[in-house]
Length: 268
Image (cartoon, rainbow, N blue to C red; front, side, top):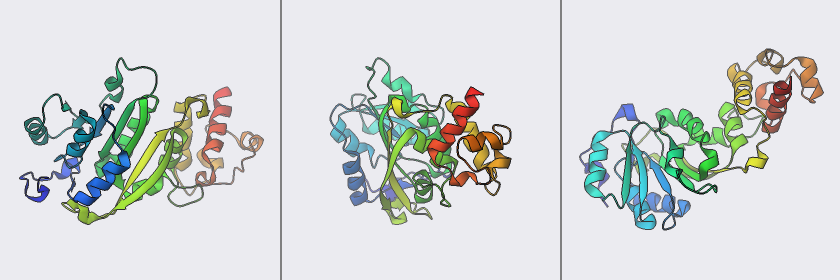
C-alpha cells in the first residue's frame, strides 16, 4: 500500500480532495461493499487509489470517473486497460447509464466512492436519475449529509434531500469514519451510507418532476406553513381532502404525503 501522505500529490481544495489513508477503514469499507468477481462497478473520484486497488483485486476490472489529470496519469501508470477504465471528467455531468449499454434489463451497475463533500448534494440528485440502472450505491460522505439522507419526518435534519432520496431508495448508514482516517484530515466526521433503489412498482408519483418542485417549495422557507409554501400548487381545501393540515410545515410530512399532494396536482 502506498503511503498516501508522502505520495507526492498535493490535495486540491477546488476538487474537495481528502484522501483515505487508514488501511483498517479501507478494509472495512471494501468488506461492506462486498465486490464480487466480474461485477460492473464504477468508483467516483478514485483519488490516490486507496479503494481502487482492493476493488480491482476482487472485481478483476473497475470503471472510475476522475476529474484531476495528475491523478488520471497516476492511475494509467499503475493499472492496465484490462484492470481499469478511466472516464475523465466531472461526475456531475457523467452519463452513468452509458456504462450499462447492451446490458440486460436487470439493474447491474454498482456505484461506490468517497464523494467530494463540496458537491455531495448535487451529485446525489444526479445519481438518482440513473436509479433504474443501479443495483446499489455505497458512498462515504460528510456525516451531517448522511444524517439528512436518512432523517425521519419531524426532525431538524429532515428536508428536501431526505424526501427525494427516500422516495427513490432504501438507505442505511453503515458506520462512521473519523477525520484521522484521511490525509489531509477534514474538519468533520464522515459516514458510510448504502442506497438501494426501490422497485419501480413502489414509485407512486405520476410526475416525478412535479414532486421535486413541490418538495423544493415546501422546504424553500422552512419556517412557513404549507398554506404559504404550496400556495401555487394546491389550496387548503385540496390539502384537507388529503387529510393534511395546511397549518403544518413541510418537515412534518412523510414521503407518501408529498407523493399524494403531487398526484392530486398532476390530476388537476
